[in-house]
Length: 433
Image 1: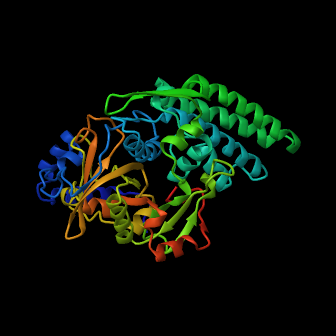
Image 2 (image 1 turned 120 degrees about the vertical axis):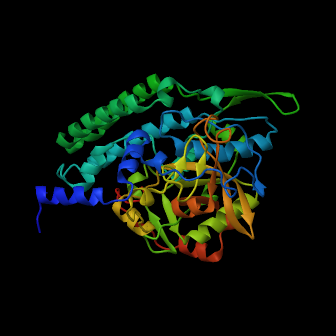
């Protein structure tokens, strides 16, 4: 085996290129517009239209802007549609900034605890190096969002609106990670008896940083609004917890994250303790089932009148401007004359598949009781897709949807039995992270 590239091999590559049909024309197209545009399929497909046999009443879309809070937005979107209907509100938006504040604080505490727990391991240890690579970002899982709501409640957006930093998190992420790495170094080199004091001092600093960036968190507030009948309401002296109980009141333990990946055995529960960052809060749990089962459960929840939080790889086969999610949208294998197909299991095993985004299912078009297309509420503002709503065809959903959060009372016995199994503990770097 020759490890280095030889000039003889390069000459062969050039000959192979010259013998490829239409290579000169194709190279000009790819150079001018890029591979996706060069291989773009036809958007006008009758199976990918914004018309659905089951469609929930929803409000205007939200906008996470330049932040990684899709998982929080998706969770709050499922709740706000319910709350707006219950209170007869024309529109309602919960404060994403409020939960993001405590999300970053809880993540900081969890990371510092991890640094204390692994202080005797070398920096080259896989777990330690993985944790230090990204101490604190603004991504997360459904169970993280549920744990935050259970502990901190909710507030309306008017009580804690967005700031520049909450909507544009890149610079703050760098700053917070620098602070956490600095503290991690100090903790690792400190005497065991002094580590807790160092951690608390750092958390006080981080709380101040968060207050500067996200604003002060409200402890009590008044909720004033006009309902759809133009009647004025004022709900005074609410706390975040009482507001949540009055306007949403869901028992979040009644919701289960259903995953579908062929990389792992079906009918088994899984845990991801490395990301259980709300200490003593709701842990991350998945139940892995076949794709068809997950799809049927999502349809059942929509039929029951409730939106579905779902984790997916939105970057695959997506046209952002039109809001189209269609399997095989980009014919890259045809363009480059090579087979780029990978099974889902192989994509997860090699890092090609990733749960890159979370959105909300708010409708489905059923043909012969099979999902032909899905109405998807995104959190990228109203200028993308159909006033911010995307349309996914059945092939895309099957290929790139990996998680759905389903009400427990909709789960059949075989899924409940799988949930009850002893969870397999996944490492911090698992593909479902």
